[in-house]
Length: 571
Image 1 (cartoon, rainbow, N blue to C red):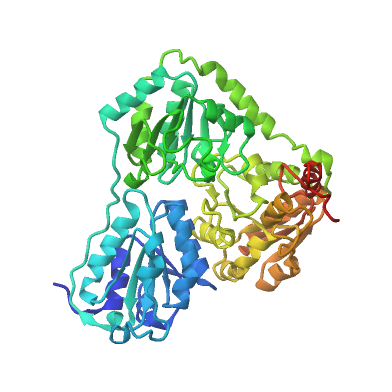
Image 2: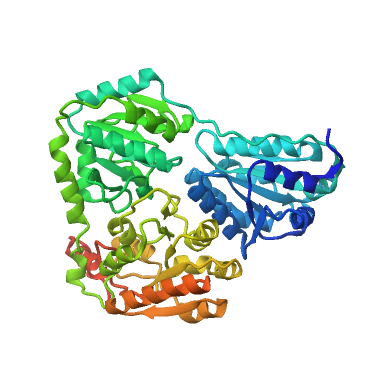
């Protein structure tokens, strides 16, 4: 039995035993003892945020980037509520996050004490496990279970509430061991069944995504696809699983999908869904695959047992981690002379055509050409640059035209959470200081968490921020124009001077209004973050007409006017 320690000291030492090297937080009086213990624990780096959503988003980005659990600590009540958006994101994005929440002392619980909150009620529907630790001597047990749960099977968030007095208790408690993430693996029978199905197929497609894709797993996947001459598509916002330059890559299956790729999925006679959740965005609103029994033969492999058969009753369901599956697929005897091999070049050609300059730019030539911008961005960044984006129509330019070349280079919320990109990019730079990190945000998206620029400056996180400023919530405006053309309310924005805002935080701010200005601005920003190790922001003044790479406001209004019985929209 160890010597007596406070609950706070026990907690910090258990975090170290679980391999935690950084803790994202907004300090609160409910865990002062933990903060004090961190003074004597320099190997556990404390990253202090300006809002608890930033702490939770950063923990999730750290987990996505490193594959290790991300840990955040927030105070009770308001802190817990502010962090909830990051926990929802971690849940939908299958990220191993452990959220520690300060709680009111145990002797006043159930009285609606100051900032008291029921964490089980708040987080229960979006976490793998929620618990409260009421005895200091059980902290090692609870922490070990939290990390084991967060990392095993389908990864996800775990929330632990720690009452203030429990952290102050002195007790003797044995340390736990470091967690060991457990993943299932495919059986010989399942691999044999998959090969038989592949051998009978005429039009197979591989659809990859989800968590757990290491560099080695992606390399094994490449070998499997090459050996069998298979077309590979990536699920929504998991484009970095497979090198987008590879001749077997045929595009992203998500919002704004290439219509030809969508049709290929519908006509496929076998879909190998490897790691992807088959959620709404990746199935075209559950239309690319029919529920509950798809018309295509379906092999669904996923780390989470509960995901198998949840929406789609697959012909073959494999509960497995992706490294375990990819290793077996790489060793599988290839199909001899596959009948589908001749169609691979055509599928790749369709992707190449889809990525050319979109027609909307010909109909409405803008001063700032976002297609040219993305082309230059790819050529200017190193192959291992980490590119982050939040939610909004601006991200469609990135999803459609930017090729991801290596695992761990894409940070984007499948949950569609606005405000994600800024803290995620800062967490990426803190975690990988030698890599170039670029963050793309819309004006509405950026201002939801812009205060984290202060965090970036405080921790020398030299991120290049690109802010697409069209003065509106563009995605909602697009839906307004589709359903109620010409009737606009609630989507127009009055923005600050973004360049001055960046300067006020300590970084630099640049403004780009036309295409020719972008290359020198990006070069200046990249040079600045390398030399100063502080954020650099480029405001991109965008044409509000261009709602997406496919449509403009005038296009939507013209389409509405052409429909029988719909009056012409007002200007």
